Length: 383
Image (cartoon, rainbow, N blue to C red; front, side, top):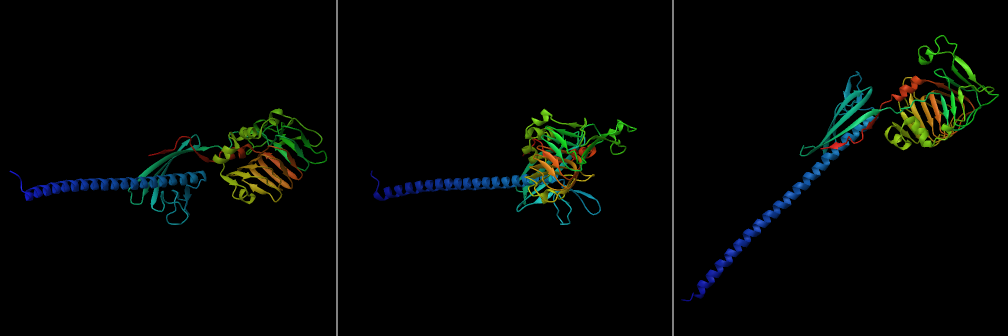
């Protein structure tokens, strides 16, 4: 028995309806899946963005604290001499009173653990960065250590890789030893000048013990060299010194190449002499370029000596240094200059004024004790 046309149409309509419903369900499921995938991807992107921003905040907090430790500004005292540990001045009174550093939409909470090891400080910096709503956080940890900027202390007042020519009324004195001038070439003390060198006087009552007690019970002085006589205190034509390269001479004193030392150990880097000669006490100063004509300056003090490195020639009048003066080029000073500690010259050393170089191991030891905080290699971690 054949179906009627109406029944067939009805059956076809139901089939189309069923297929349409199935397709609609499938489209709905696919749309829902795609929507969820898009939302999940957007959430992952947002989470990744928040995590990156939190990491950047943690990294910034660690870097800020590292710079403050290098500059010895992490710890601050208020007017009542109460010490505050921190790197952020919340209330604007000039005192670091918080370890929480706030940025635009992020913040970093920094802690510093300090340990003393044989007179040198070791620091562990932990910086946790987060969104302001704490929706994401990352932590960075890095270690720093305090190193000596002068591992090899010179043992005589004046060292020059080339010629030493003094044409003035100066004095080179070493009451803690028997050498005054060490040169890789010739040493000339002009005959009609009053340039003289002095060493510890063997006739001193407490000699030679007085050479070790310079500050409390110094030896007397004995004339050793002048314009007519060059004594045993003057060492000239030393081929070992003359054959050193610029880098070798620098490394023999500081233990690092000039490039690495400048990057890691210098506390004050200047290309302007006014910059280099201000706020010098207890600093490791790098002056880039020749210090040409003009007035001199005073570097360091008896209580807080300095290390002064001039990557060029020093040609100015009047320089006063407490600590170490290291000139990579030529040293030619006029006028009145005083160096208490030592001077090392990579080129020629000369003077036409009145220079007074007095060896002080105590000032050099204090300069070697300047705290220079550097990053410990391989210690950077983030989690």
